[in-house]
Each structure stands twice: as structure tokens, then as C-alpha cells.
Image (cartoon, rainbow, N blue to C red; front, side, top):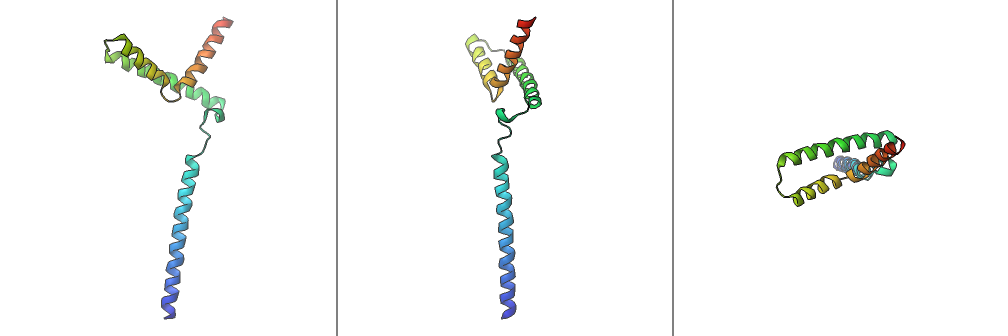
Length: 108
């Protein structure tokens, strides 16, 4: 009888440890998902520059693909261009790029 109690206690303890490990892993994943280091205000200058170049390249790729679609109406073409520009965080990075271009033109 003592043997069964000891085994039951060991199994219960092992089960509790597994549950604790599982919930620890789950909570750590939640914390990683909530990490705000990828927000615009928390980015370094090099990350912002990298994101600007990625954004510019993706906008150009999308515009080239749009040109290949051969859309007949100008209004739907303009709508597609606006959708391309405002997709995800592109508007922020394109605004920064436009700001720097305007500063360059002022000083030239």
C-alpha cells in the first residue's frame, strides 16, 4: 500500500512539473509576442534605415506588378496605388524618405 502511495505521489509531482514547464513556455511565448521592441519609436537608426530601404523596394516591386496587371480604368489604378502606399508601415517610412529627399533638394 505504501508503494502505491509513493508511486502516486511521484506521478502527481511529475505531472505538476510538466504542467509548470508547459505554462512557463506558454507565458514566455506570450511575453515575446507582446514585446514592443519592433514599434517605430523603439527602433534604432540603422533599423529605420533598413526598413526604409525594404519599404522602398517592396513599393517599387508592387508598382511594377501593378503596371503588369494592365488595369484599364484610371480610378481603379489610383486606388491600387493608394493601397500599395498605405499597406502595413509603408506610409511612415515613405514619409521619412520624402522628408529626406526634400531636404536634399533644398540644399542643392
